[in-house]
Structures are given as C-alpha cells and as structure tokens.
Amino acid sequence: MLQCQDCELFRRDEKNGRITLLCNPFSNIKEPACLEKWQLMRLDGLLQAYQVTLGWYQKLAPMQEKMFEMMKREMDDVDEADSWKSNYDDPDGLDDQDDQDDRLGQDDDNDETLNL
Image (cartoon, rainbow, N blue to C red; front, side, top):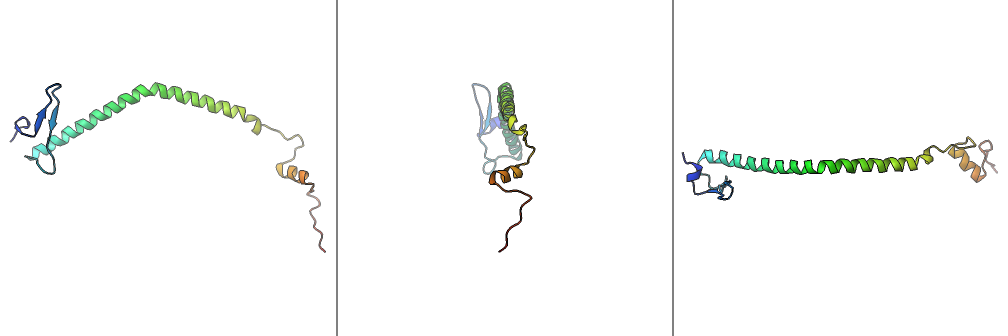
C-alpha cells in the first residue's frame, strides 16, 4: 500500500507542517485508501472553517446583545409614545360610525327614504 508521503501528489507545508493532498477524487486517485484520506482532509478543512465562524459569532455576541437591548428600548419608547392613541376615550360614548353620521348630518332613527 502506497503511503501518502511517498506519493507525488502529497505536499507538506514547510512553515506550519500542514498537509495538502493534490489528488482529484475523480481522476487521479492511486489507491482506495487515498479517497478516504482525501475525504478526511476535506472534513478537517470544513471543521476549521466552522471553528473560525464560531469564533466570530462569539466576538459579535456581546455587541448583538447590546443592539437587541437598544432596539427593545426604542420599540418600547415608540409604543409608549403611541399609547395615547389606544387609550383615547370618546367623551360622548359614541362609536366611530355614530361620529361619522353626526359629521354628515345623518340620523340612525330617520333612515327612511322618500319614494316618489
């Protein structure tokens, strides 16, 4: 069985020792074990990307919490400022339809129409 370090498609970065496989699983895999190793390398790359993403989320979490608190305060202030609209009591005790009829000069009791 061919070892990775003996393969011409194997590269090791001299600076940090990171291993790179130049294999293409669709064209130049030497042995079946190469495909398994290639898959493990790809999974390792995905894991590293995920860990970096989590690191960014952890850095942004405190700022996000502050932003949510500020937005909640702003929405509460808007609701409080608009509360007079929903707490308005009609002094006459009339509903909206009666108010419209009063403005138009109509009376609910005299809804009869003249038929000529």
